[in-house]
Image (cartoon, rainbow, N blue to C red; front, top):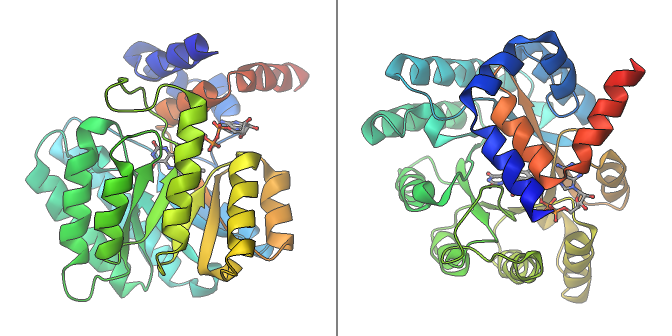
Length: 309
Ligand SMILES: Cc1cc2nc3c(=O)[nH]c(=O)nc-3n(C[C@H](O)[C@H](O)[C@H](O)COP(=O)(O)OP(=O)(O)OC[C@H]3O[C@@H](n4cnc5c(N)ncnc54)[C@H](O)[C@@H]3O)c2cc1C
């Protein structure tokens, strides 16, 4: 299985296959399992549908590692339109998730800083929240620095947050720093390929660290997100919360659009908060491939469904 994971992660970076897939109608049909649509109207519709089931959402306009400043600004424009749409639907309990490499981080960190500062300011005005996703480990420190800086600006507190990956050795220390600042964190296992000197290579160690870090978050007094589809991680979280008498509404579980919908609904029925990460847009290929890397059986599942249509 680790070989298949690496193969899908390598494919996620294949430019030729990406161009071909994103333009083909077969590609669109394949991606629809994990991607809510190609347009802003479609993603808002998906968020409204989730809201009907008492599920909140975080909206993600797909794209990463842009290559020109214009592309970065165009990416930000889509988010500004999303924030406007969210502002007119306050009941929907939606926010946005962004990636720094989509905002020009590889081209000019100053440009990314300016763009993200603008988005957070808009998030404050729209009374919502901007989550900065975590990408590969070459961006970890820069992401933390930027989010801490933005969170410290008067008025921004509680409107910008971050993601921490349980597979990185450094995460416990990072959580300590970020929670001291009062920053909201989404904890996930981590979706990129990392070297063994930076990240636990074995799943069992990632899982053990996830449980430990989740407990660190749940006792911090800040509203965090526990992002996983792993029933063991969820059971450990539920047990910890019950044993410590922690209010089940003081945090949220988070899952990805289209994955374990049964579990999403059952946690809501049990009284937990649930937020779904809802991606949309034409640049779905790297995101889609990372989902196949997490569970190569998805490739078979999707192929079977396509054959049925
Ligand atoms: C809301 C959210 C936001 C995220 N944001 C980031 C981020 O910013 N940076 C980052 O590096 N990673 C992010 N991730 C991805 C994360 O790091 C993991 O790669 C992903 O969630 C799979 O890990 P898992 O905890 O579900 O457990 P795993 O051990 O991978 O899986 C446990 C079980 O969950 C189910 N499952 C997991 N993945 C899939 C799938 N793709 N398809 C179908 N079933 C599946 C299967 O039943 C599997 O047996 C995010 C995940 C979520 C839920």
